[in-house]
Length: 354
Image (cartoon, rainbow, N blue to C red; front, side):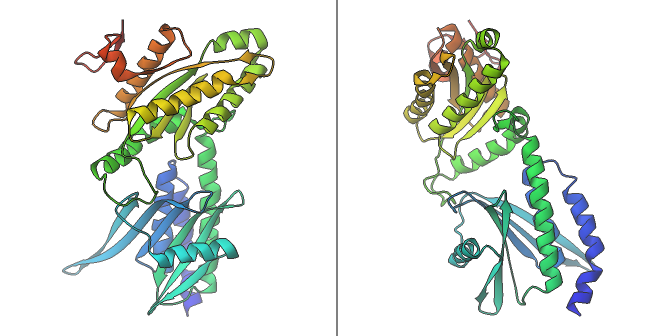
């Protein structure tokens, strides 16, 4: 009977997959995955945990449905919550992650009358996430096939979206990705700043974030003198040096041409300055094949959630131009430039360089 009931729902699977693959945002695709699989396997609550290369959970997404009865009308209410703080992952879930990682397949754990079930989500041969749900009975063979099929479609489609949001030369997230995710990023920063004492999924999560714009000095001259192939090699090597300088939790984008944007999380100005200076010095001290020494300039400012993200980006960009005007191979902080009268900020919010 279960298999017959599951088979009836197969056309619904195709409709839901079509809806999921019509989405062009990676975060919304994750939400659509939970909205798709929950009803198909008959559960009201599902979870999706993103995992880093060390097996630590870096983000959790919870989806729940409830039935509301008003007279003769019944409606389904949905709730999606992305959790970065104020929630701890149950030990039972963490134990399941360990089992899934060791066995390389779905695992379950008995919780009194229910089963806690976890399916791994792989990408490029590595465990990237876990899909978790809880219910009374075991998964049927047809349900298991459906779950594996949907997760495979999700992984392949997610990889395609992720590829479209990355720069083909350096592999960094591109300008389109930055602009598409700025508002979401600001919401996360705002949530963390307004809940500084809350428990977080990531240990020692910072309370303050900083946005910097970095640019390779005299890069046009490198291209003109050595050619674009050498110029591309310089871009790739500088990308690797920046990645080595920043922490894995920091975000790095190729913003365009020879320009990069970094969003870092540290708790004070001194630490932020040190992080950007460390990147600058690492590049300054590196000897590039054929070209020799190359430098970068940069400007950064606080990622204040009270200020529109594009305005913050504009402030960092103006600070970069101030660094260029001051002689290059340096990092400038926006507030210092305003204090010293080098930058001014009119009431309109636009910024002009004297």
